[in-house]
Figure 1 (cartoon, rainbow, N blue to C red):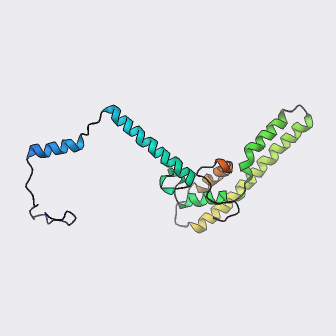
Figure 2: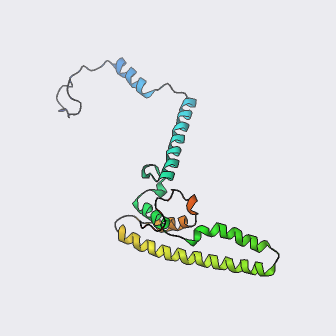
Figure 3: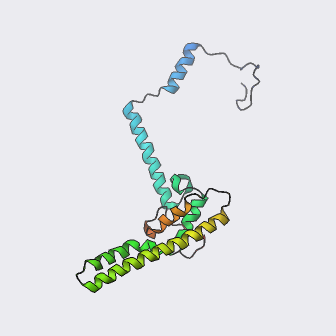
Length: 181
């Protein structure tokens, strides 16, 4: 028997007899037709999908690049995540501040309602300024670090991440605040 890893000369004999047609057809059928009904195939497909989603969930918790969703993959996105996670951003406190401001605006005291209105304005202006500064810094840093890679959408991805509270971000932050990525 010849080694199957070595290429065979096209005119050399193959080293075994040609199988009869009936034997070759039965071998093809046994490989192609696995005994699986439609229900079994659907069940198997469901289990495979469930396993893939579980791997993806684990990857979002641990930061494992292999199983992350496509929107989170790649060195540019990883750097953008680390860039955002290493700093404090005002936008991540938007939801708690919004609740406080909403409660203040519900109180039937005119001065508290005026303060709530002013707080809305201050919070929104601070978030916009913080986002603009973060966007410019990130864009500059990405251009320096990844000149040959596709950086499209990375800044928007990072700015959307700033709007989430740090504890709720997925993939989970892999750097501490103050650490430089």
